[in-house]
Image (cartoon, rainbow over all chains, first blue to last red; front, top):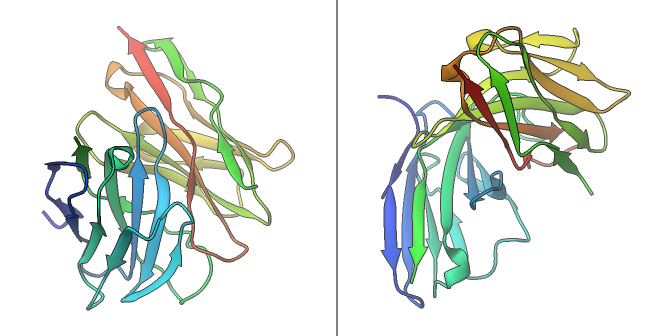
Length: 119
Length: 114
């Protein structure tokens, strides 16, 4: 399967612990997105990479959140000192876009998500 | 503020009847518009998009959508619904005025009854 994969699929942690999620995009895709989705809501944009550069970060992303895409391939999203409000589905998506600026008119391919539960 | 609205939490339709799932948006500039579908325990899947040109776009599984610039709407339609179309549908917009954010609506659950 050459789609977007995410690991783990589920994570249960205690408040105050750190967690890290991984996303492997479709190999030829240069853009990678992270979203958060809570019940009854659509995906909320968190951050975006063009190759290895993090080009945009939502104001929703507090200092406890950090994302990397070190070699322009896979990406990690780390949440430090988790809080119960962080409980959500974390989605990763990738797309192929021409150029380095501006909105992409190419569709995004989503992974299955990582469901985080903070106790 | 840029936003996407899906005014109906749920749409119920009988199998074989036409369906419409509504979406309106508020963005600056010209939007790129998308519809995605989410089945239970599956990731979001792309259905169709509007970039430019013909206001009626066709997508996967017999779905189509009509872009109306004056009403800032992008309603999803299908002439004859199937039970297997039952899922959660998301409208999304990506403004062309720079930036990379894609804004999603809250979703509409489609229930097709046999």
